[in-house]
Image 1: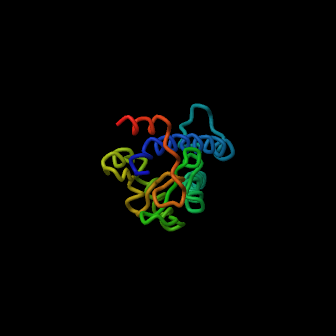
Image 2: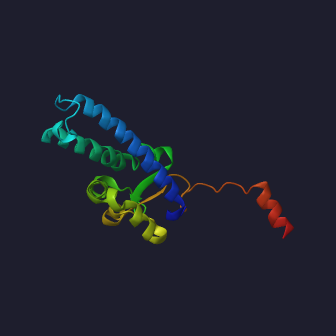
Image 3: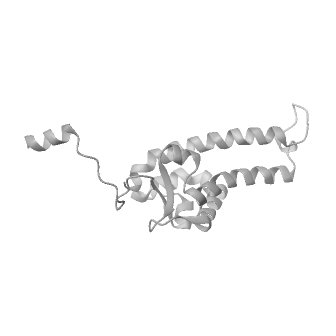
Length: 160
């Protein structure tokens, strides 16, 4: 499966992951932060240590599962994973770079970069870490047999 074939699944996985991170941030936000009046700005609710905890939660949500399994929850649901460009496991170093770029830069320009990187469909973190997102199963070169052709495909070939 080519990089461009997983673009829709990448977007879907990102939406799922953002939803999960949002819920985790709501839970964390309810546990930390100072009690302030309802009219107070959000910036007064969290201390620097609270902000660091939030950053670590977001960073860890993406980095640790991708380093261990090549997938966040969203990628797992949509059957895609992160790997090195050569097809090997991305590991902690590459996924650290990838996540660092995601947290610092990609969230601003990620979709634009994905759309302009041609068939590779990579975000800045992928380019910096030399990784890619691929279908988790059925990649070319895997020892999995191809599924048999559908009846419609067989009839089309016979009718030619």
